[in-house]
Every structure is written in structure tokens, then in C-alpha cells.
Image (cartoon, rainbow, N blue to C red; front, side, top):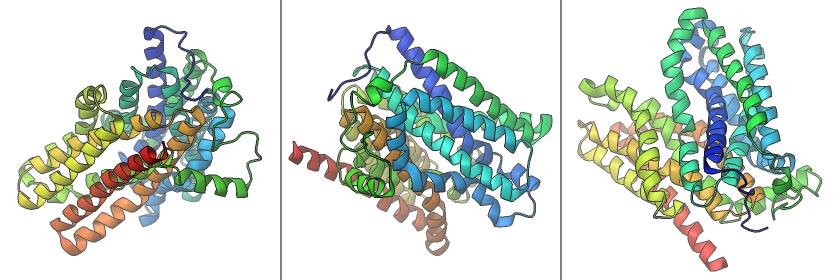
Length: 406
């Protein structure tokens, strides 16, 4: 079963239709972040006494991802990717509907914590299943599409959110999200194949073993084994170096942008990575390995942040930086199925990627704020250099370890 994928009984049209269904479900998962982050001023008005504590509405999901990311990979490979997606979508939709009641902040925070379980299950199961239903030739493009799910949801909420707020406030936003999740649960149930035979009995994998009891000792042992594997750990450890910077730069960089271009750049920068992922990255992944594309993204991004120091008054260094992030996104996600052949290993690797991504989201913005507070614009430069050179080094070292092992 090593190297096996789900049997390709469906034609290309059906397969790509299923890929789009998984992507649409992923938009619901990223919406669990976007419905707070994009409309944060409205949440501040809804809970005016919360102060800095309101930030926990975002970080509760990240905290769940940091603690349980790899555990989610183990559970998903036991339960089945499609089944886990359906239950996660139902849970997420129900929680969004309860949040629409706008309960007191402690209750809302508790709901967000539980919502983190739904989010985590989706971001582990969905890309793993997407990799299983596509052929080796189609898989890089499918994973490139998946790599844009986070940014696309933020764009959708930025466009649709103000209208929903004007219609009925935050409850309208939350109910719209709940409706999307419910619709996606039904669509996933109808459109996607049952993967349980592939994901479990036929291929238990070498790290997530369904025949073992899921106890604390086993979970800790699997963490050590997974993060000691240059196959399973590499995508997540590299992703940490991307995730620590993406939201951080979007949050902190605007005051440092040229004033005459600032508003336009704030709107355009998040879209650049999506465009590059779907165009240049997709073309490169047909020629080069996913790891090579990711490493190129990190090295080019490091060069881009150096130009921030050389030309601080120019908008182009920031444009180049966010374009390079598109290479990191697609290369990072595509590397999971490319270097991990078993579905259970892919689930664990996606769990590690989610874990490291959430850790990056938690640490990045406070760290960059501290650096720019003490070093000014040079804080942007040193932050990016360390993050991106580390990302390239992680992937290159892991590739060397894989070559030595084989």
C-alpha cells in the first residue's frame, strides 16, 4: 500500500468537482478566523468592556491548534477523512449559529474554544482527502488551490461582511457562516467518496496506529516520532516560518508603507499570494519539486525584506514579499503529499502543519510589534530574514536527512 492513493474510478471532471467541494468546505474553516479578524471593529463595539481580552476570540482557535494539531492528525486517520469533515462542518455550523445569539463574552470564548476543534479537524482532513482523490499529475495543482483557502476567505469576508453588518449586524455574518457550513456538510456527504478503507485498515501508517489505544503516553510518543521524521515534520516546521510572518506583516507593516500608496497596498497585498499561487506556483510545481518551490519562496522573500532596508520609501519590496509568500504557500501544502506517501502519514503531517501554523499565528504579531517598537523599520527586516532563512534551512536539512535515510 505504500504510495497508494484512493482508486481513481471517477473521471477528471468528477475529480475536480470533488476538489472544488473540499476547497469550498475549507473556506468555511478559514471563515472561522476571518469572521472575527476582518470585522474586528464590529466585535469591539459588540463587547466594549472586553478591552485587550477581545483578542482571545481569535487566539482561542489558535491555542486549540497548537495543543491538539498532531492529535487531530491521529484522530482523522482513524475516523476517516470524509466522515471527519462532515462532523466538523456540522459542529462548526452549529457553533456559529449559537454565536449569533451574541452571548456574554465568557460564553462566546468557550464557544470559540470548541470551534477550534471543528477548525482543526477540517484543516487536517480536507487537504489529506484532496491529495487522496487526485492523481500524481493533478495533485500539485489541487494542493496549490488549497493553499489559497485562507486568503480567499478573508477576501470574501472583506467584500461581503460590510453588507451583512448593515443588514443585521454580527448575527447576520455568523448565521451566513453557519448556513455555509451546513450546506458544505450536505455537499461533502453527497459528493465525496468514502475513504475509510484507505485511511485505516488497509493503511494504518507507521506513526498513527489505529490499533493502539489513544492514551496520553501514546500521544506523547507519536509527537516525538512525528517531529523526529524528516518526512512528516518538514512541511509543518517550514510552515511555522511562513505563518509567523503572514498575519504579522499584514498587521504591522501598514504604518511603514508609503503614505500615498498605503490604502491600495493594504487591499492588494493579501491578494498577491493567491494570484502567484494559482499562476506562477502552479506552473513551477509541474517542473520542480514542491520543496524546491517552497525553498525558492523563502530565499526570494529574504531578499525582498533586505530591499525594505534599501528602499524604505518604495512600495515594491512589500509587493515582492507577498508575491514570494505565494510560493511558500503552494510549495508548503504540496510538499505534504509529495514526501509522505501513506494517507495516515499525510494526515499527521497536515496535523503538524496546522499545529505549527497556529503557533506562528500566536507568536508572530506580538514578536514583530516588539521588534519594530525597539528597532523601527529594521525590525521588519531582521524579523523576515530570520524567519525566511530558517524556513529554507529547515527544508534543505530535512531533504538531506531524507536522502541519507533512503
